Length: 560
Image (cartoon, rainbow, N blue to C red; front, side, top):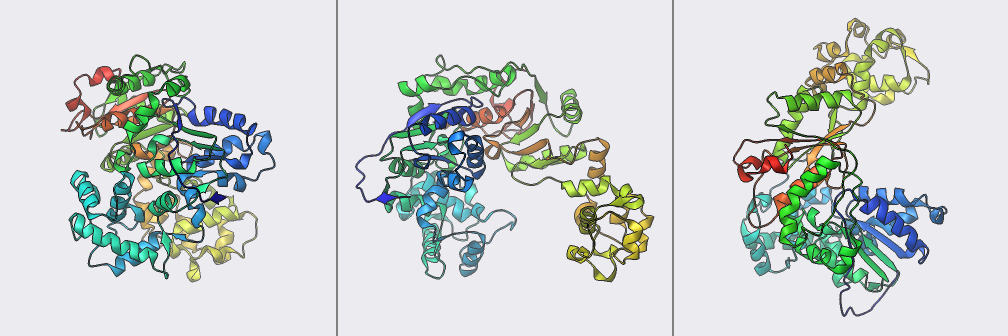
């Protein structure tokens, strides 16, 4: 990033391109605009920023085949099309990012003040300390001021930040000082996401190498991020935010719906609004419009806003409880098993994912979490499915490796538990007798008709990780699901699935806490349903916080 020291006198206001979900903000408008800008500006002076690596990669894929870029390597393009944090980190490439190993070392140094990770499998940045710092920073509070921290502590949802031995802003400030000292120590020298933004805002020079700055899904930006982007765009000829104020669902982390509603209500934004729906069918479109209507009325946009659906009609279904039988649930299961369409289960809070997991496993449905891996790997399904071939026919060296990892060390002779011990095998097909004769397997393996029998057998193998999943694996295979490709059924929280598209959407509203202070639950529901194209299912009418309890006309809203 070429820079020159220039005093920043004012902050540039971006142009805003609003568009409801599925109106082609990223894949259609952005690509076409990028082509237009390439005729006016050099490619390396056009910067496009997003919030996730996945989104940035999608944008690169959308533009890298353009004739104007045919000689530009993806690695170069990724310097210009990347995440917000990646771009602002460019000035600090010699400093390592603060990560999980640093977190563990910091916790060890301050064990008397801070609790370690309750679950070591979750990312380090989900620790209460870092969440508190990130969220307070996102909302614009001065993290060096105890008074500022007291203000945030008084307003925040404290349950988010459980885990401190010292409660309250005083203890938090002391802990943060230790955290800052740890990162600034010459021995460590680490930089956090918060640092990347603030260092650019307050210390970096104003860039002179940007003609165009575009920010995708801009409504997710925090106040400090917006300020940093405005500074970065000081000398830019084009400064554009793309987004949808109605999809502002990260208020806890500092996103500001009011700011984007103000941008959306300008005459320029209204004139540029995208209205052609490319995703949601007629039923889902109507549900989304019903859900968001109170917000549109609040901001005086109800009569002005148009958002057309696709030609698909689609249906809306209702499932009272996932653990009880009903016609709508049967329709859902049948559609999952009988079609090649994709399905997304989404919900407000993580506790709900347990009931979704149970339902999918009991139904024998292959699935994965959006933010994780498949419940059962493709390799494991392949091993179970092709066991008869392994027993009675010939299999490849790669298939043998897959079985080897699965079976457990007890089936192998001479302690051959490492896959590397298979290296002497040449790239040809083998039968099981050849492997026994060569000393790779115990002869007893031949007696098992099914792989599940071997895995459960005390004397040979005891794969604890898979034994409990065997009934589920058999159900999935008996259902005839294609387990060679990525699962068509996925689930995760609404915050994790934002920006994604599926053929069908299943929204769990059984834990739906109203918040009279803002429209957050409304916007969350809007984001959830708008992920779908064709059919939708709604789960949950019972419980003190269900939609049925807080919304008298919920059946009309959901087109039931």
